[in-house]
Amino acid sequence: MATRFIRGGNHLNGRRKRLLGMIATKRSLTGVLNPDEQDNRSLWNKIRNMDLYEAHRISRRIVEFAQEHGASIIVFEHLGRFRPVKGNYSKRANVKRAYWLRGKIFHNTKYKAWEYGMITSRVNPKDTSRKCAGCNSWVARYGENDPPEGYRPGAPLFARPVCGSKGNADLNGVRNIAKKFLARYAA
Ligand SMILES: [Zn+2]
Image (cartoon, rainbow, N blue to C red):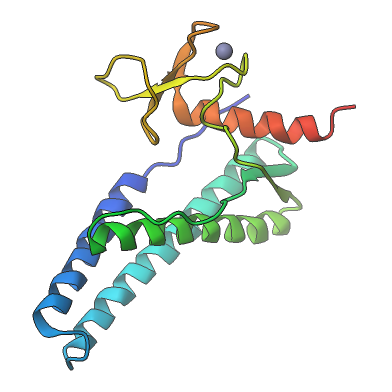
């Protein structure tokens, strides 16, 4: 019926990563037990406030959108286990914060939805991004300027070799989430 993308994720990730990089630099210069720790505390507060603000903003947008379209249920996918990544401190810490934020967005959405008389549900995330929501075949996932082949997690586009159509990878993902939820109640 309707689609809305809530933007700002890349911007937030970039800002957070820079702040985490500043913390890492200060740590390496001063050692963890230095009184300069206070400085890092203010950086941490900044990151925390940024994330809390976004969790609030995004969950509010989701609930408003659902309400505008007369929805009664908002479906998410389960987060799954946290998988740490390799890389420097700011990269690893950033991925961890982003994971935490996704959980927080669900939590906030659940409470806000309840106030509007809507409920939330979660489905198994397995293959929601990897399969075509139309024909259930494996998809290719790739960037704007790449050939439509392979699978790069997080890339914006997808193509379905079997049924031939192409589109936005996130949109295909949410369609699979909806399908899983509906399949649960199919007679
Ligand atoms: Zn298909």
